[in-house]
Image (cartoon, rainbow, N blue to C red; front, side, top):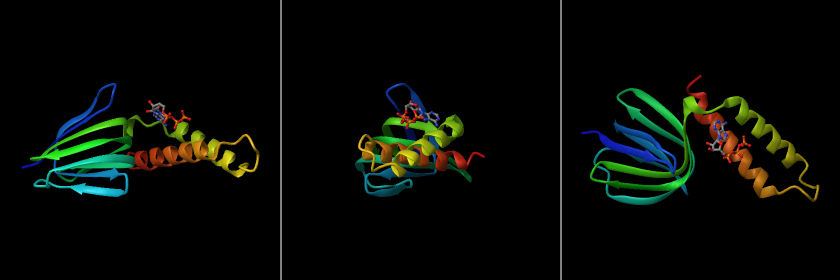
Length: 134
Ligand code: ATP
């Protein structure tokens, strides 16, 4: 029996589907979920989410949220989740270049390191998640 997966953001339902396998970014590393998984409630971090239906793997970028697994039902409440086909690679590349440029100029007093690092991380995750759809 497959997993019954629902991924929602504050705006909309991103996915409602039967899934054979799920791989999600937790705050401390990736967690794989297969049917029959033990009940779990966890905080999600940022990274690439993969779900597999039969032999087809699908990807999205995910930024923060919660996941509940119970009795083969998975509910993910995400702050941001972007299916690979919806990711604008040119925008992510510009964001990456801007962030890298800021990090190169980090000795200049008006550069916010954490902000630039966060932007670079988001851009890299988007590029990674969308690379499968190319
Ligand atoms: P940018 O500098 O390009 O705005 P960002 O990392 O600062 O990138 P966020 O604040 O993470 O952007 O996201 C703001 C909104 O824009 C979110 O709704 C997010 O889904 C969307 N978004 C950001 N980058 C992309 C992208 N490359 N493709 C599609 N949607 C994106």
